[in-house]
Amino acid sequence: MTLSELEQIDHVFLTHAHLDHIAALPLIVDTVGTVRQQPLVVHCLPEVRKSLQDHIFNWKIWPDFGQIPSANNPFLLWHTIELGETVELGGRRFTTLPANHVVPAVGYWLNSGKSSLVFTGDTTSNDALWEAVNEIPNLRYLIIETAFPNTERELAIQSKHLCPSLLAEELGKLAHTVQVFITHLKPGAVSQTMAEVQEDASRFGPRMLANGQVFRF
Image (cartoon, rainbow, N blue to C red; front, side):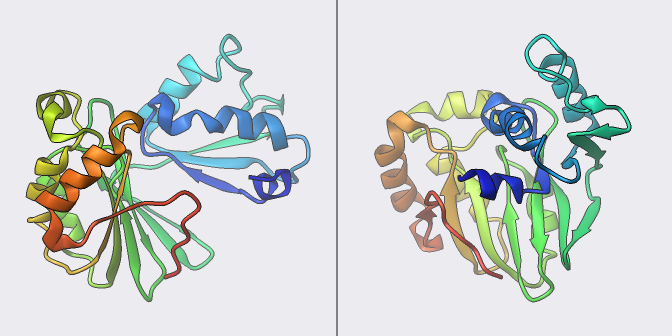
């Protein structure tokens, strides 16, 4: 992204505190904090905020931008949200959804009023998620993780991720016909995992999420 594009980011919604999901946040705040007119607002679970304040924004790994340049005028502003809570921004509603991961985590339901997108975040088998998703009448897009190939199914279960066979089981719980996009593929196994996704979950028409892909809804 360009510097001007980074400056235009006013809100960040975090699913959980793992490094691959928050790695850019410290750098974004450091890069554009001095040129923004208002704080960057970070929405997350209370447990995620605590983890980041304890282990990242702690003056040891990275400065506490919630206190810079002052506590009353910070570069970063935390907004904690609970499971099932909704934040409305620009006519769109962002609602947290249950995730089943090794740390406190959520997914997100984005609703424009006309249609909706669901991002599962990192999760494994999760009946509570599908109960919530099946109540969304205008669902159009589903972005769901599949981190491991089937050869690592036990690792997927242990680390609370999905593999293609688990993905097919989970999508079987979906009551809607939607466009399905796959994310969180391990870099060394992208081709293998997507081939298995196409085999195991072909009836759902899954496609790999592309870098820079734009969803309009």
